Length: 351
Image (tube, rainbow, N blue to C red; front, side, top):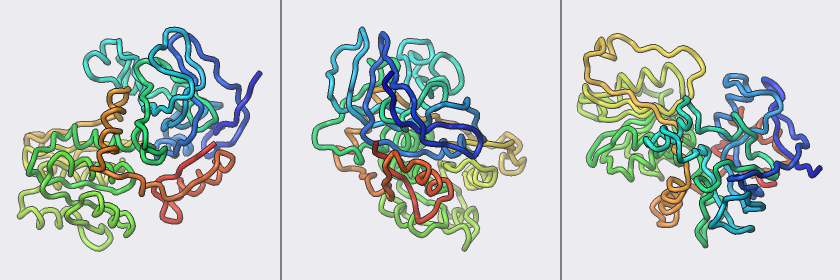
């Protein structure tokens, strides 16, 4: 039996490097040899036991690699071809997929999120890709792994928050938290045509990165009340769209309080506790507010479009990679990333 190194969830508080069998492909599958992957904030929720996955699961859902094997029925690809696979791997054929809700594949909430959740993920030397015809996306010549590393999840999610918020040309957008997803939401808001982008965080490096990606104003929430500052910057009107990209009651509520009547709250956060709506900020449910949520859009067409954006030079997300580790150092990488030490934004993991 052939084996490989992989990051395995053992139980709350513990992800270890272990040996696992190399997956065998069946009809419709592909085996991809990982060349670069990364750690997501959702992986940290798994590590802390805040999101349940079974013990023994290989974690990770942001793969870039080369095709090692193709199962029966997978055509149009070749062994050795460089590919990106979205964190969400829809089947492309069920009612949810055909209704343009690929992330909810199978008609189940989060049904399209398989890697590191319901099947083994990609923080390993190899990953088996289900529904390969719907999910393998060739990497354009000239693009490096790190240039496209954000496409599978962070870029797709952040852009998805801007898209779900239906930002219009000339809108004012407030974005709470400038971690990797929030930064991508900032870049997405700029591409969607927002004329005023206001971001909230407290880490100087993140606020500076936000400016590089399109923020017009930055607010350090430790220095000033962000809701009051957003109201000042909008002449008391409030934002057209507020994007929540952290997943806490406080940031969710602040987004709601920052909105104009009729505005849209676009939520990207992963909430691990009870979430409530304040009566006054929600105008007792009569303020014509919209609250929308987004799970990372996936599938090969989504990945193709995101890589087109990267190739065009309109957005460069390479600077989000602040640290690099070998797969053998995965436990060290988790310790750094989970504790947000040393100015980390994203880590690149290479087997």
